[in-house]
Image 1: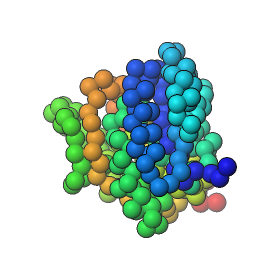
Image 2 (image 1 turned 120 degrees about the horizontal axis):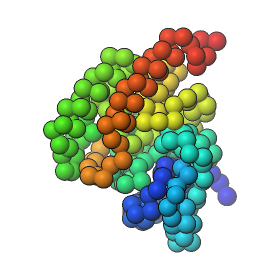
Image 3 (image 1 turned 90 degrees about the horizontal axis):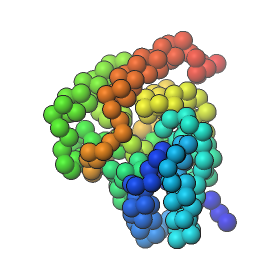
Length: 243
């Protein structure tokens, strides 16, 4: 069997309630695509029925696979899956399906133009949020993004949208260097991609606001702290990029 064109990675921890509809929606869209694909759920040490649900759905969705990883956080689960799958392009998306897989068609346009990394954005012209985030989250998000731009990633307006695709070549260079397993891993991946010279494109996506999001205030501040760590590691060349 030849390797797939697209590997879709879903990091999941205790997602038994939200995952079934997400799997159905992803397979429904991709089954009509003109390219081959696989869907991998990277189970991050769930304590509920998430693994059993994936195995049950694998009987209905031939391209669905379960990858069990240790309790390492979302970033660690994504890293493990990215280095395990075989797709020519490798996309990770959230278990709550906040960004539908049909948005990949927008990404594919830029992949065909030679971009190595394409990221979904909720903060640039053309993005649609349904329903809009509350005022507190919007203000915190804008302040956090401004901080991230000043410290490490100028020019990127939404580093935290959980819908990003990487070419096989980008995965091979970036992900072995990844250190952060928590919420700040997106920032680290983009910072490494930029430093390594990969072409990155930020595109607007349609995003459905989930009121049951698992990212709380603690995750917000830990992301900012991890941003400072990334800046420090880059300054000290802890990634070994200058060798």
